[in-house]
Image (cartoon, rainbow, N blue to C red; front, top):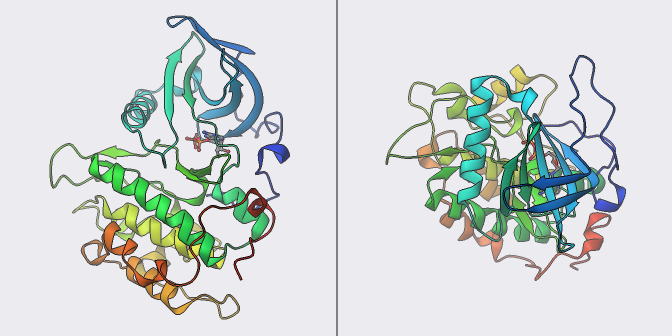
Length: 320
Ligand code: ADP
């Protein structure tokens, strides 16, 4: 979870080359200008740099018919350990399975001697985190719009036995029409047997559910994504995550104690507040289901926009 920094969001304001290397980090050479999928006989021409994550660098590309896509490039030298390889194949396997309008489309996957390439739907408007940095907070109508799309994606994932496990503003991308696309399946897990519990401690500190950290014996399941939906809603409306503090241990202590507040200077509606409190229940069994979140009166109170204009990248749309 990156700390707030300079705006780096919309396609037009994005850096066109990767940032300077961090100390001690071995920086792989950039992928070729023309990336070829030899087996299929197709190629992708690299255009701008879009962003980077743990192992991957993401570029905008044009396919042979001129369509813009994103390519997520993982350098093979950086995933030498068996654990890292297993993680990458799990990400590819799970993301490839999913096909939903609110999930980043996974078009193709291939490799050459240096890299593994994932061809993805291009999300031109960056992530909800980029937008928050510019806007500081979202209006309630915008939050309603984005939350309905996020919940639709979660319902689809859960129906297909996939837990995302890393839902956060930085992994919610926006396409050219400002629609949410859930991405980055790097921590996702498949529930293969009914009632199965996952035990790996993973997630991003600010968004991690208490049972992942403190009920390792019993494990966790789909409810961790619902917790993250609550953290996301709070963050959209207040402008920072509920349990945020300077050090990670203190964040975990706050999560364990379920200690967060609604700052008096950041006005939000009583029903939004009530919904957030109900989702951020420490007991996963008592958390609302995705359907009952959608049925909450907050979605029916106030405006529900039919679309979000591109100008929302810089200024709050006027819903008065
Ligand atoms: P990692 O799994 O290594 O964390 P991500 O999938 O989160 O990598 O991607 C890293 C960055 O690349 C993102 O923060 C975003 O800026 C950019 N990015 C990733 N996927 C896309 C996409 N489909 N369209 C546009 N930008 C993307």
